[in-house]
Amino acid sequence: MTINLDITGLKNKIEIKQLKIFPVILYGLSKFVNKYKDFRMDLNKDGELGYYDEINPIFTVFEEAQEQFYQVWTKYDDDFEVFYQNYLLDMKNYQQQEIKSSKLLLEKNVFNVSCVPWVSFTGFNLNLAKGYDYYLPNASVKPLNLFMGI
Image (cartoon, rainbow, N blue to C red; front, side, top):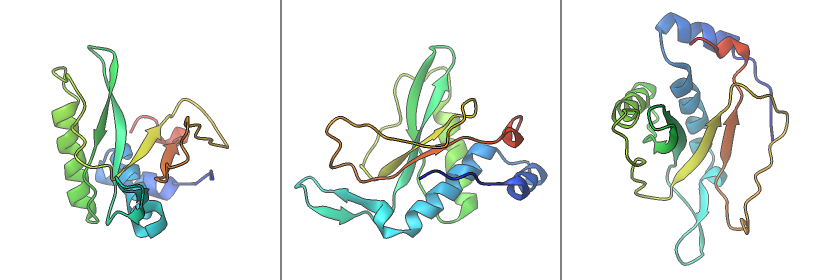
């Protein structure tokens, strides 16, 4: 499912509070995904269907010096300020030139988020080879031009 969403009001609040746009969007997606049990569905190691108590967003960070992408996840917290600080700390720790590997993924309770501001799309199709047991949601965000420069 894809939707176009006008976030002009949110953008104005973000500018007033001098926040970064990506972690704000990441928090909104995480809050929505964690609100619904069905979005936290996955198989355990024995192939049994179950639900995580919560899931965390995982996303890529581009490291310019090595010209490589690394996966980083941020611990979800229902409190926006806590989540935002978790994100900032992760970026401080994992967006340095000294990055040699991704943030260690301790559990499988993550959902993928991509932010691709330079493309436009009205549909999304995840093609996984033999991905019949993939239940977790994916979020692809195409920020409107209003995001640019934030």
